[in-house]
Each structure stands twice: as structure tokens, then as C-alpha cells.
Image 1 (cartoon, helix red, strand yellow):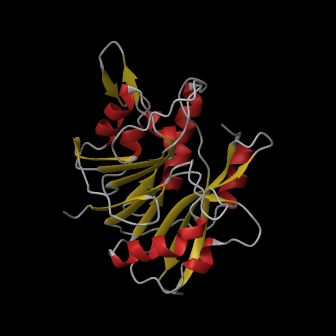
Image 2: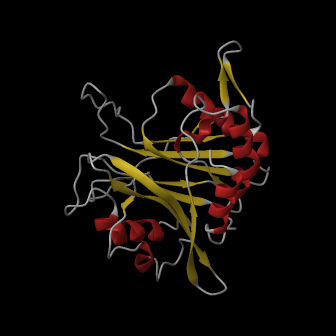
Length: 271
């Protein structure tokens, strides 16, 4: 975790925090092995993707992480004009390092200001992947200082392994709110948007998502496919690259058929 001065500087540079009421969430996942016009990201089909979600009446789009490679000449803003329903677009910028591995740069929430009809950028970053390297003070700082900055109206963004802020107890054999992460989320925040880099296979992750979705809350997680383990094996499973839970129960949705080579889904949280 950063020190307080660094944290404050980051807050000053974030932009205007979204304050929107959302209900219909569009999610999209890609496969690392698929190249799109020499780009390993969503950029080449972005206009078509936004059109699919806008016609479906989505008010928020959640991309799996490593969404767009940062490069000169590409800006997502130019694709956001003339949308009728979408008010919030959440994604991550990345770059390839010297060994051609993915390297996260920052996370973004672009949101529409209806007073000015302009899209506004809000910037933030993932704070941790697991609890192993964190002190209790680090986790408390995340809950007290970062969580309020991730609330976007009736939704909150928890990035990838930040859902590990709730802890599985081996002794009790259940998930517990040891660090008060769930308690810190206000009751009127009913949707947790949880973009992920790669599939998390440990059994605790399902239990943590169920736990976070209790009290009539949604948690929507989406990730990429195609990552190889150290033995070169890909463990994507047969299901789409997402999970959705509402009030402790898994919700299944049917992927939207498309010719873009993505997995696309829509969740209506009002139903």
C-alpha cells in the first residue's frame, strides 16, 4: 500500500467520482489467444461491442481486465458519443513489459454527465491481490480510505483479488468479515462490479462472492480466458468467463451470440 502522501496525490488526480444509479449490466470477456487486427485487446471491435450493449438497454459496461493496450492514437472517448443508454464504462489500460507479459497501468470509470452531456474520466488502481503480503493496517486503510472512493452511486468497484478483503476461516470453515469490508459498503450500494484478469480457481473465491452478495446484493465478476499455467495448461472450464451471485444464490445467464469472438452477457438487476 502507498503511504498517506502518495494516497492523497492519487486521490487528487482521480477526477470526478461517478454517482449513478445503474441496473442493467453488460459484461464482456476475451481470450488471450485471440488477436484482433494485430491488437490483443478489445479496441478493434469496440464500436460493435458498445452497439450491442446499447441496443440491449445496458446502462453500464464492465470489461474483463487487461481491456485496452495503452497506445498513441487510441482513445475510448471517441467511441462513446451518440450512445442512448450507456452511462458508465469500466475498463483497465495495460501495456506489455520487456518480456511481453501483461502489465496493468490503471483502471478507469468513464461516466456521462447528463448536465453537460460530456463523458468524464475517473481513475483508480487495484490495491492488492491477496492478503498474504498485507498488514492489518494496510487492509484497514483500504477499507477506510479506498472503499469510499470506489462507490459509484448504487454500485462499487472491487478489482480482481480485492474481494479477498473478506477472509475464509479454516477453523470456522466459513467466510468472515474480519476487516469489515462488507460492513463498509453502504446498504444502498446493491451492485458489486468485480472485473478480473484471470479465472480464480480456489474454492474460497466462490464462497467469498456468495458472502459478499448476501443482504440482497449483487456481485458480478468477469475475467479473460486463455491463460496458461506453469505447465502450459489452460484451465478455463466449460462455462462462460463470469460468475453472478445475488443474495447468496448463483444466477445463470445465457451468453449473447455474436461473431466477434467474445463472450458477452447482460444482467438485469431489477428482475
